[in-house]
Length: 64
Image (cartoon, rainbow, N blue to C red; front, side):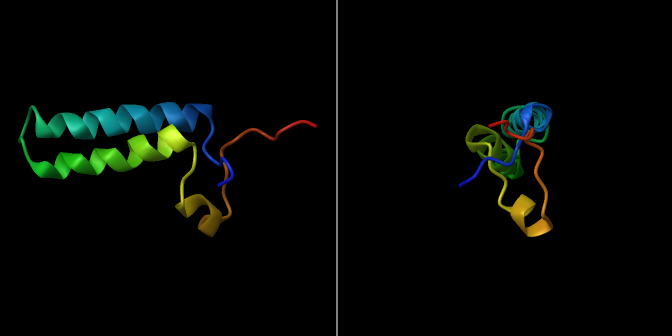
């Protein structure tokens, strides 16, 4: 897996994931908040499976 999630994108995914996970503890208290695991996992591994399909990457270009 080649990294395709950059810094700002990664931070946004972490915030979104934690916000969605909080729905399982506060607010409507539904299990739909577990959807927040998806952005958290993609941020953890710095890989989004949809980016290659769309031909996208938010990682900076690596210098050799």
